[in-house]
Image (cartoon, rainbow, N blue to C red):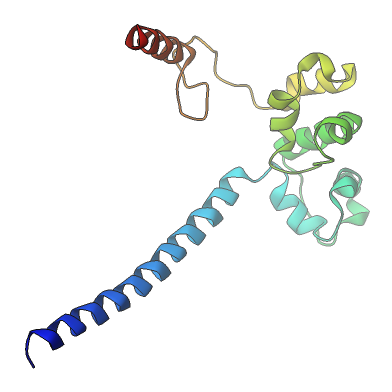
Length: 166
């Protein structure tokens, strides 16, 4: 067993570790996605799973409000009640601007961020003002985008880029 067999053995171990590493990475990615889903779930997620698991998203408001339609007894949290009101008041806006994304983690995001306030119906805009959790005051120092940059940070970055280009 000379140097040639040692190289083959090392390559075999590396190949085995590569498949193990891929499986481990896949497991971590799956775990991360599950945790992310749990964090991003909408305010009525647990109520929907308990009371109306087989309903279409467009029928959930009616089902959640009517206890006689619940598959199992379910108490509706105040956050869920607000989310039900939002979905009901903004039904036309959700159909028009949010690809009919009723009772999803994107519903509030679509109505509050992706759709211009002036494009919402007055009823939806009114409910939106109280149905969503209040965001911290925007003083320019807190994170404002997906990278965690505040408006102040972004302005400083733009200034730095301009100086660098000059």
